[in-house]
Image (cartoon, rainbow, N blue to C red; front, side, top):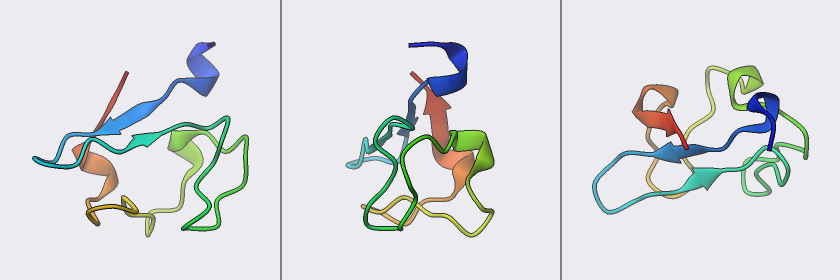
Length: 58
Protein backbone atom coordinates (compact mmCIF):
# COMPACT_ATOMS: atom_id res chain seq x y z
CA UNK A 1 0.00 0.00 0.00
CA UNK A 2 1.45 3.36 -1.00
CA UNK A 3 1.76 6.30 1.40
CA UNK A 4 -1.09 7.89 -0.52
CA UNK A 5 -3.41 5.03 0.46
CA UNK A 6 -2.22 4.40 4.01
CA UNK A 7 -4.77 3.44 6.61
CA UNK A 8 -5.50 5.39 9.79
CA UNK A 9 -6.62 3.93 13.13
CA UNK A 10 -8.76 5.57 15.80
CA UNK A 11 -6.83 5.74 19.08
CA UNK A 12 -9.84 6.10 21.37
CA UNK A 13 -10.00 3.50 24.12
CA UNK A 14 -12.36 0.64 23.15
CA UNK A 15 -12.54 1.67 19.49
CA UNK A 16 -9.72 0.92 17.06
CA UNK A 17 -11.71 1.65 13.88
CA UNK A 18 -9.43 1.67 10.83
CA UNK A 19 -10.17 4.05 7.98
CA UNK A 20 -9.06 2.38 4.76
CA UNK A 21 -9.12 4.69 1.71
CA UNK A 22 -9.41 1.64 -0.57
CA UNK A 23 -12.82 0.95 1.00
CA UNK A 24 -14.02 4.42 1.99
CA UNK A 25 -16.68 4.71 4.72
CA UNK A 26 -20.16 3.55 3.78
CA UNK A 27 -21.74 4.80 7.02
CA UNK A 28 -20.52 8.36 6.37
CA UNK A 29 -21.00 8.08 2.58
CA UNK A 30 -17.30 8.51 1.81
CA UNK A 31 -16.52 6.81 -1.54
CA UNK A 32 -13.56 4.53 -2.22
CA UNK A 33 -10.30 6.31 -2.99
CA UNK A 34 -10.69 9.28 -0.61
CA UNK A 35 -7.47 9.70 1.38
CA UNK A 36 -7.74 10.37 5.12
CA UNK A 37 -6.26 13.84 4.60
CA UNK A 38 -9.07 14.64 2.15
CA UNK A 39 -11.92 13.81 4.54
CA UNK A 40 -14.08 16.82 5.46
CA UNK A 41 -13.43 18.51 8.81
CA UNK A 42 -16.86 17.39 9.94
CA UNK A 43 -16.03 13.68 9.43
CA UNK A 44 -16.04 11.63 12.63
CA UNK A 45 -15.21 8.03 13.46
CA UNK A 46 -18.30 6.00 12.55
CA UNK A 47 -17.94 3.84 15.67
CA UNK A 48 -17.17 6.25 18.50
CA UNK A 49 -17.52 9.76 17.03
CA UNK A 50 -13.87 10.77 17.54
CA UNK A 51 -12.40 13.61 15.46
CA UNK A 52 -9.46 13.43 13.02
CA UNK A 53 -7.06 14.28 15.86
CA UNK A 54 -7.65 10.88 17.45
CA UNK A 55 -6.37 8.95 14.40
CA UNK A 56 -2.83 7.78 13.73
CA UNK A 57 -1.42 6.23 10.53
CA UNK A 58 -0.90 2.46 10.54
